[in-house]
Image 1 (cartoon, rainbow, N blue to C red):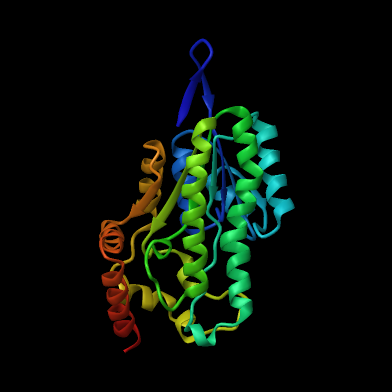
Image 2 (cartoon, rainbow, N blue to C red; image 1 turned 30 degrees about the vertical axis):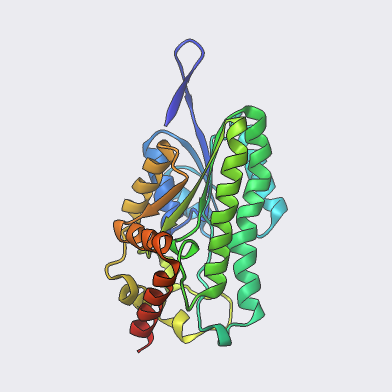
Amino acid sequence: MSEGSGEGKRVRKTAVVTGGASGIGRAVAAELLRRGVHVTIADVRGAEEAAGDLGCAGVACDVSDARAVRDLVIGVAAEHGRLDFLFNNAGIAVGGRAEELTLDHWDRAIDVNLRGVVHGVHAAYPLMVEQGHGHIVNTASLAGLTPAPLMLPYTTTKHAVVGLSLALRAEAAAYGVRVSVVCPGFVDTPLLDNANPGLPQTEIGLRARTTAVRAQGRLYPVESLARDVLRGVARNRALIVAPASARVTWRTVRLSPALAVRAAGRVLRRITG
């Protein structure tokens, strides 16, 4: 992922990956590094250790803090003279039956999963408009395209991220800036072992990994998803949906929302029955 500039000069591209200490973010960062991209990973904890393992830069950053995200993005762009990619990947899993969720569950999901993306876009988009290029890649979820019960705060924020991404993509094209949104099914990451972090725990939260397996079957390997993501970015896909089973579910929703809701109900009964 490098591009020519001037008289055959090769310019290394630069990327920021939030939530990069583990899971999808770490796998994407590793793939970017293999492609010769300058990578800075950011995470609320573990960024420096992960960066040492990967061989890239690492910064502690809470994406719910707008100033911290802005300092991160502007700092990386100033250091390298450009920002080619922003992967707004940081997120948390929040799950439980609707009646047992507190406002703390809702607020925390919105602060991290939605406002974290907004903060990244707010910091990087004007910079990319000014330089005339760049690609913002927001991590949503298949839950942002389908009716996904038992995790309403998560589902709500991911639908919002999809809407934000598609609308911004339409607006950004005039400035040479690209926007994609990643909508994976259940992926084998530590997120499934840390649902409702710092929040009142729920039965669904305690068995998030088991629930995911019962809902989908085999969990998708994170390394496979990272390759899917970068393939979709290279092709400038608006929506990057993986694995194949997730694309089938997405197409069902598009064909018949009512059918998709009934199917989600059947999955819910299988999970909770």
